[in-house]
Length: 160
Image 1 (cartoon, helix red, strand yellow):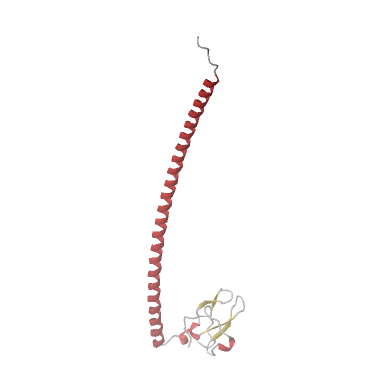
Image 2 (cartoon, rainbow, N blue to C red):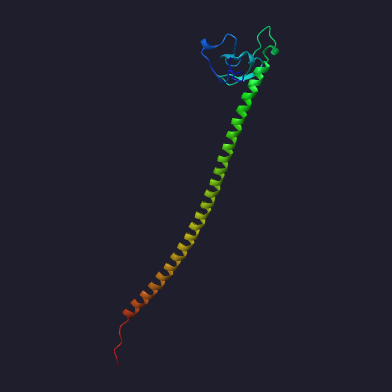
């Protein structure tokens, strides 16, 4: 017998594979033929084609109580649910650990980025100072060169 938690929204069967006991019905939204284990009677599922919610019909002449699981089935479902919960909790812990690692990586990356930006700004300031010093030195050199050229250009006076 198929898993009662497995619905038409999670499985598709070839028409030849549909058990005679399954409830077969059409999606009222798109007309897709759907099949579900009888214990799905009365449940709301999603259509495999249009993803719209669909209420599984209760076969004529039956009541919803006719589909209740036996204590053994309920016990088995509970055990499977507990196992699934344990797996989900383990996976959640793994994901939380990964998220913590990613946050630490992000913080370190941001810290390094801020340090690089500060170093780049300091370099820009040093470069601007060096350029100003070079410009001042160049201006002094031009002034000295102009003074020397002017001195060389003066006619010499005869000694008297």
